[in-house]
Length: 398
Picture (cartoon, rainbow, N blue to C red):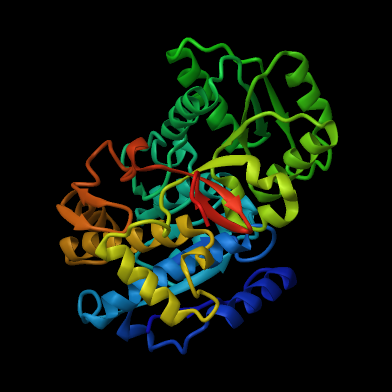
């Protein structure tokens, strides 16, 4: 069993959230000298808490497997979790605390691009590997650092945006799509990527509208897109904001195809958005539905054995968090093994020495190289939708 614990720090509010996370994920810690620590900074509370839970589960399964085979460098792996509350400032402080106080060999990131972008400069400065397992902002890995310590097993905006455009054109015959984007660095990343992807296809957008994370009415922005002749919408936003877009469309009575980034998968989207949540088609990197390779069969079996609430593939929600984290942990372990050390610069070089790994999402062949720190490509995406609170591949019959 991996040792997983959350420690409170900084504020009473964060103490409360950390204790809550500890209640859910704590396992009796081994002594520090017997363990090799890795950290996670993710949303463990709030509307996107399901994303953090999924990441913890994926990491935990991989850690169980690694520890069952003797651990790494003669030590058992230990996971230390910090709740960033989807707040960039808190995420940055949490990463600093994990590196400087807990002396982790590496840090895993969570759902929110703004949080990861706040963490990246410190990780590069500290020369400690940072592994993204959800946040898709292009600049997270492509950050311009001369010595880049940031790697990722997740979607990448610049690639997702190409997939969004191709899907909208093929599925809906889109000729004049509109963009409705969250007004933060993640939205900016996708605005740039969508513009480039549409230009490459000779498509002109009907318009670009932004909305805030706490907006409860997006009708004005959507009305402008409708009046501009939008025949489909590209949506970028996490759970709560995306739900408000769907509810605003309902109030308008506007039935328009919505092709979304994967933000809705991070939490209670189906509950918050209402009946028309199912009309949103969004990208994922993995699904436990359908025919599974042996790795997928084994992981699903382990999930059902370890977590009582998982009784079938439909209960692994969001699957992307579990799958990305599972593969990411194994790839980090391979990098550490190749390095033969917990020194950050040696682990960084270790990533480039990984050959073939038969993972959950795919079989990885030399997943990382200098100048190429993203292991997932546009060929690895799956299109999904919410059906009865479950994330299913589009077209799946229950």
